[in-house]
Image 1: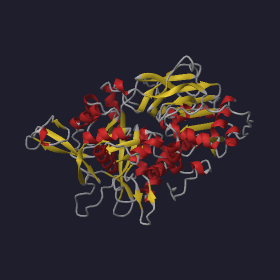
Image 2: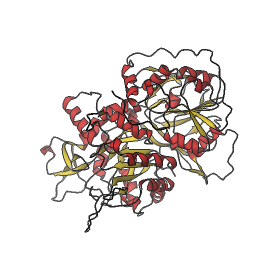
Image 3: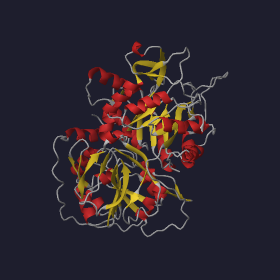
Image 4: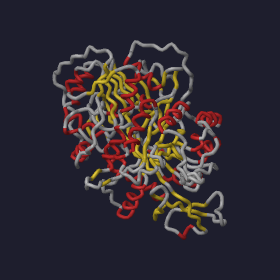
Length: 593
């Protein structure tokens, strides 16, 4: 696979051919044997360690996959400079080292093994140097992982990283804001208290007698798993501090306090803590920004009425509700748990040529410390010069620009249709390519169905349901036909069939829209959301139709939705996010405040 011609951002790390692009990462994972446990990581040689004397510099081990832009922005926000690891010697000479592991276990270990970084990392940690691993940066410290494996890890902590058990009704991946149970003095968690922090992962390490001396906190999600470890100056967390934004003090965020405690271990904050009580996984409230170019060529946030984004007036202009970066920042401050950017004309153009959208992500990630999702046009593409770009290359550039998750729409419908026809996973679909390298938690499938009313469910081959309210002609049943290209083209596949297929292909989350409810403000389509959320074991985001705070409690109490998304009511300031959360709390529904 040829490397993409676009230049890597200045944050790109190791200057070696083996990891200079997403193409090499996927090549490494293909060459890895998934049937046998790789031999234990070699014992490190006696390598010398010489720390830098610059207190303002943080060394960042960025192995070239996934979104680490938010970590960079958080470090700079705290007043530190960043030195990228380019050779194993940079690790050994680091004064403090952060490893924001992103993606899947096997490709990451391939990179560490093939560059010599793994051995240097083991030496650094065994010398009790200041280290902070994040997410995959924690998992790689263990002996092995079951993800695409078994796969050998660095072997510094006893234990195997295994997949969450979804048979007990818990959604996998574990996505969202959950509570910590702190088990010992962790230093970096001292300011957290009973607050939610953000997790997004399908695999976890479990406590045992062999690793109990490492464990500093746990989290409950079906089982009690390891949320953080600490031994001397070595720390690692399963959650994402750079995405755990939310006010802890008047001038400090929850996640930034973790990074501050690591970077400035002797610092203390004297402000009065805003007390909260987190006990379990919170329901998420997501702000969605439909982004497109208006008739003047400016990138604006718009909102459709059943997917029609133009004003019904003489000029028929694109509805303009504000600037994407500014609105995203406002929603973050108002308490949004995630922000989703949907490039609603992305299917028409080559997305890597959409530089304004990439710039929106880069700018938003500078001040928005909650997860960012981007969708629109994520697919394989051949340009006018017959240059082929894989969907993985397209997604990789979005990740490097600040996206945490990629939303796939039309391309997922085509992949599901092919899979249902052949029953063969080719590994070539955008869902499979991206989830293999970045993990299925990074892949969201956006489903855009419309109701097709029926008098008799046997009239169609697709899953139909009895409606709570009859159709316009008294119909008692409906099936939900999936559409592509912004709702313009119906396809011979139902929402139920599509959801089941994309879960099997490797999607980690479903964004469930409904064209009939879009922009109506009469509430979510409870019938549809209940059908899909009962059918799959991955998280489902309810979308389309919210018009009042009661609609959010309604969807959470009547369905298994993990999150609820809205756009127009937030853009027009009809219902603030803060009001939604206050209402949910009164209704006994746990949310992050």
